[in-house]
Length: 420
Ligand SMILES: Cc1cc2nc3c(=O)[nH]c(=O)nc-3n(C[C@H](O)[C@H](O)[C@H](O)COP(=O)(O)OP(=O)(O)OC[C@H]3O[C@@H](n4cnc5c(N)ncnc54)[C@H](O)[C@@H]3O)c2cc1C
Image (cartoon, rainbow, N blue to C red; front, side, top):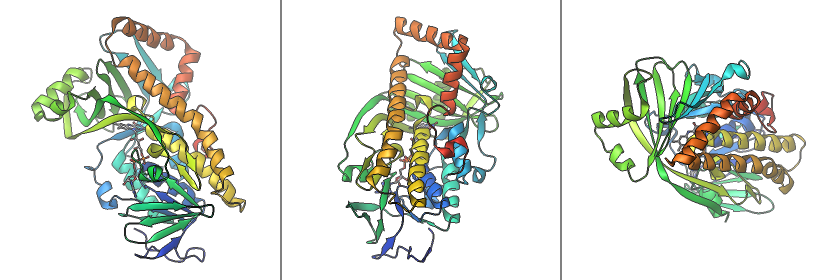
C-alpha cells in the first residue's frame, strides 16, 4: 500500500520485477504478522509485509465474523505498538468469566476484582483490529505493506533470504518471518513438518442481540458437542462461538433464519431475555497443529504458521501475539547492538523462549476440549466437581485467573507494558 523509496539511504520500493532490500520480510500481514511489523517498524527496522489478501477487502466486516478475546498482556502489546488507540472505543471489556457445565448447578466464576482492577481482557472484532493494523503500518515510515501480493517462494542461505513475489519482484532481507497462517506455504516450503489432527467439530460464529445487558460477563457453557461461548460486545450484543459436531454443522448452517434462531436459543438459554442472531453466520473447521521447529536458517514462524489450537480458551491469537512480543524483543536487541538479527543464536533464543509456553497451551486446550466435549456421567461429575473446587480455593483460582489474563510466565517487555 505504501509508496516509499529510499528509507535510511536504501531503496525500499517494490516495483514489479525489481528487488527491495529490507531488515525483515514478514510473509502474512494479518493479526499476527501485522502486529510484528508494527513492533519492528516502531523500533526503526525496515520491514516489508507481504500479504495475499486485498487490504480493502480484509477491512470489510463481511471478511471475518470472529471477535477475539484479547488478554490483558496482549492489550499491553497492542498499546505499546500504537494499535490499541486506533481501535477507538470499539473494544468491550471482559470483567467476569463464568464457566458452567450444561445441566449442572456447579460452576466456576472469575471476578476481575479478585486479581486487581484491570479487566481480564477485551473482545475486539477481528476486522476492526485488521483495519487498525493497516492504519498503523501505513503510518510507520519504515514499514511497507505489499498487498495484495502473494509470496511464491522463499530462498534462504547463510547470507540472507530472497522472497519471490507473484508480480516478479524480489524482497531481500537478513531474516524472514512466516506469519502466513495454518497452511503456511512458507513453512511447507522450508520443509518444516507439523504434527496435526482435525477435531470432529466445527465452530459456528455469529453475533446476537439480547434484551438484557451482559454486564461484560463472558460465559462458557459446556454442551455435549463442545463449548458454547457467549462473549460480550458493546451494547446489548454478544459474539457466539458455538462448537458443534462436524456432521451436524452443514444442517445448522443451512437452516433458515427462524430455524437457526430456534437452535441457537435452545443452547443459549434465556438468562439475557429474548435473543436474536444479527448479521451473517460463519463456520470454521477446527484442528490442532504444531510445527516441529519454530526456526530454520534465517526464518522464524509465528502465530498460526507455528501452532493452531482449539478456540475453547480463546488463546490462539494471544499465543501468536506472545510469539510476536518475544521475537520482536530478541531481534531488536540484536539490531540495536549492530549484530546479525537473523543469526542462529538469535533465532534459538526465540525458539527456547516460546516452545514450552506454546506446548503447554496446546496441551491444555486439547485436554479441556476432550474432557468437556462429552456426556459420559462419571467424567461429567468429575469435571463439575473440579470446577466447583477451583471456585472455592482462592490461590488456585487466582492462578487460573492470571493465566486467563496472560500475565503468567516470562513475559516479553511489550507484554509487561514496558517499551521494546
Ligand atoms: C472460531 C474461532 C475463534 C477464535 N477465537 C479466538 C479468541 O477469542 N482469542 C484468541 O486469542 N484466538 C482466537 N482464535 C484463534 C485466532 O483467530 C488465530 O490464532 C489467529 O487469527 C491467527 O492469526 P495469524 O495472523 O497467525 O494467521 P491468519 O489469520 O491465518 O493470517 C495469515 C495471513 O497470511 C496471508 N498469506 C497466506 N499465504 C500467503 C502467501 N503465500 N503470501 C502472502 N500472504 C500469504 C493470508 O492472506 C493471511 O492474511 C479463534 C479461532 C477460531 C477458529
